[in-house]
Length: 229
Image 1 (cartoon, helix red, strand yellow):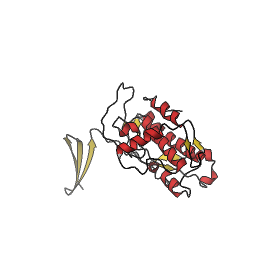
Image 2 (cartoon, one colour):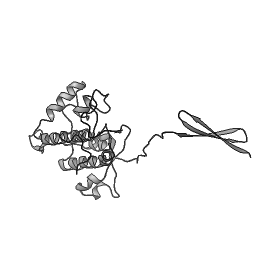
Image 3 (cartoon, one colour):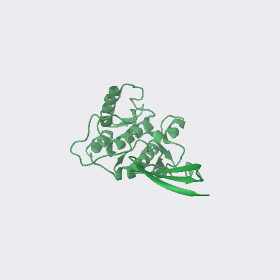
Image 4 (cartoon, one colour):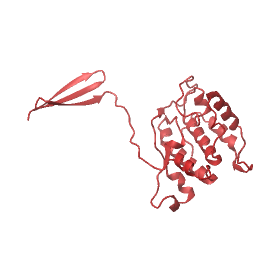
């Protein structure tokens, strides 16, 4: 069986065509600039599923905090490599269940079980800029996107962490104040009000999260933050 190969070039890269018996052609493309890709581990349950399956619609405060810390840890490598996720939300994080299930682990170990399951919106961001880009098309979910990115500013690592704070708020309350709003500016305005809270309280005015406003203030004073211990 005779086999011959021929190489061709194009504006998109090089091609190798292999002919066998003059009937079949196998074409292999080698692009000049290979597209990056991610191989994602399939994990269940998602954090969103965990929240929705809870009978009380909210999660215990300690559980909420440890899961949120896990989400932040999962974002660490992305941020250290200079990537912003841009679409942080509970549906895109999952728990890597250990043998024996969650009941076999301490609550404090939840943060080590969280993994990102969707990286499709990741983008390289630029640090140490005096002034970032403005008027950008927003990518993400209005429910969890930061005020800055929804207003057209360039997404940074800090914006992903602000999204994590929104998720934490949803975990402990069962919902967030802007969950029923549908207009973009109305959502932005409500987020600004909520970020001024000194603490997050339940219906009986019990404090669930304290130093709440300070968290947002501290993050926004770290515009070039890559990672926080």
